[in-house]
Amino acid sequence: MRALNQLARHMALVAALLTCAAVAHAQSTPDSAKKAATVPAYRFRILGVLEAAGGEPVEDAEVSNILSGMSAKTTKTGTVSLYFLPEGVSMVRIRKVGYATQTLAVEIGPNATTPITVVFERAQQLPAVVTTDSAPRWISPALTGFEERRKQGLGYFIPSDVLRKEENRPLGNVLRARVPGIDVWTGRLPRDKTTKTVLRSARPEWKGYCYPDVYLDGVLVTDTPADLSQYSTMDIGAIEFHTTATLPIQFNHSSSLCGALLLWSRER
Image (cartoon, rainbow, N blue to C red):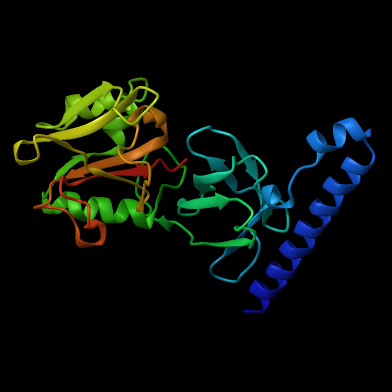
């Protein structure tokens, strides 16, 4: 608790300093450029990463915007400014070797200024085995759950070794080839201005289609239907697809009338 309080105070101080810097920069520019140079303080929202075991800051954790690929790393204090995120809600991935990757939705806006704290769990280290590769193997709790469901045989599963062989192919093509009975469609939906690659299923009773929910590292992607072209196969460590009959209860969202696609980040 003491470590959490210290980190909270530190992040508040960093946020205040960033705000002062932005204001000072604006005041040093000509009047005609002040408006363009002034950056709202909320654009510098702070995220801090702590280790679960002792509450110590985690340095050099990569914090990235999944869609744009822009990223920054935490400092010695375990903090990072989210200046690289656009306004609105973005899916953010936090990862570092030896820790379980986390994904969360982060909002940037005037009403979302509270510092964010992420608690990192150490990834599970598998027992030592005789091998020609001496590097330790890590498996996150998320991928442990994937393997447990895979053993039960309920659903369709694409493991890491298969995805590494397919990493140069678009994710939609991999799904089309590896998961029977699904429809991967590329086109422009009536309410969208851009072309998307989506999963869909015909629903005769609706005289149209429904779209499976998409989860990334256990977090429901709010962009519905999710655009699969925004995700790189080389960043995915495992995939599972479930119909409503096999969908695990923790992913049984109220809108899951078409089942769900679960994407798990690759552990580096």
